[in-house]
Image 1 (cartoon, rainbow, N blue to C red):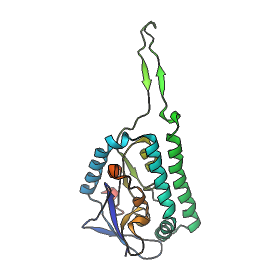
Image 2: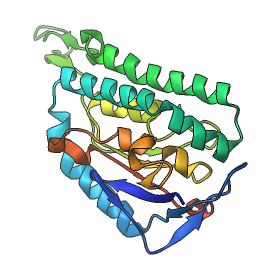
Image 3: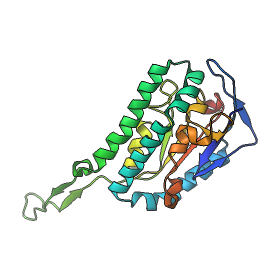
Image 4: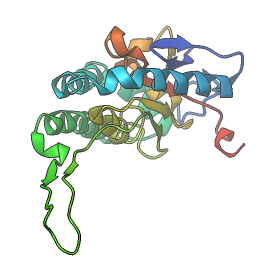
Length: 228
């Protein structure tokens, strides 16, 4: 039996309430329901992680993104197994999407190692300009704070827990709080299982170095929870 948990600040967190998955084929499993308290804890953790994570070097963040991609590749067979059960998508489609997902992570890793991503601009002061002087103007891209990511129903990997939105935010130095889609909680979720361990799925791949575990959290809820 697959028992799904949330990943909050580096820890697997359960809930008193659960919901049952509705896979296209194969067994249904119980997953923890995210509560306002879980969301609050994840957001507070992301806020606390922001100063340290945003101050990491581009090389450190690039290495983190590559590590996530490598972890996904290492868990490829397990992710595909639960993914085909939950979504009904064929193996070839999921394997192709997994390649897109890891490709996005590695693309952002390579991108932030280049200086042009910062979009540095400097307009020197023109004190004698008429009709009014121009001050010295400088612009640079900087992380803005925690980012919320909502997983898509139709892309269980590329626009999910470790998809492009998560990759871009982590690349920029922003902690992430992910609301995984309830259509495929096992594909992106965490938790214990006799068949698929917590280290099998996407959320496990987001656990960074211990100094900033709080940089990424992922939670799930009932199918109707987003309208409540």
